[in-house]
Image (tube, rainbow, N blue to C red; front, side, top):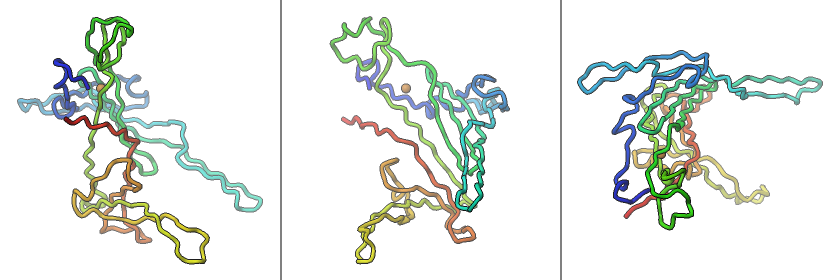
Length: 254
Ligand SMILES: [Cu+2]
């Protein structure tokens, strides 16, 4: 978000132009990954087709975070209290891609409940530009960033967008994308004192365009199912997509 001569064209595509695989960093034992981690080398094809090895490109470890996976204390049985608690122990697969000043930490977390969590962390150093200023009191113009030290402005206003392409095969490749919309229903009879409630109405996308959503904006659960496979009670096999909180960048068009 800096329209000046030296910066207006800077729109980096970290994956597309630099490559997360080509820029995979070798992980540092006991710092990037805990002491129960095992490491795997990574390989990619160079421009001439030869094989390039990245030592310790991945680490795999069990995470004992101290959280509860599931618990219940049953108080409904007279003269008996039954408590069962199970710890959350998940399997983490990690890699780091260092693109210029940034280090992207990519985790896939596999939980005992069957949940798969994708997470990206950002580290590294700030992108900065030089300036004549040494104190904010000297600045009476737009500098498109924050003065961090003598003659140093850090880029404050910019976005990082990370796009995942999820190709799910749930008990086979024939899967459907279903939006489970929460819909308000009105009660018209005289029996219930309730005037309204909400119910779930499923809508299967027939086209790619019908599957478009604004992440975090719609009152819907997003589910990918195999419509050809059913559980014993008759529900479809499926996975629910749970987006994280989304910040919506104002689009700067012009
Ligand atoms: Cu950035």
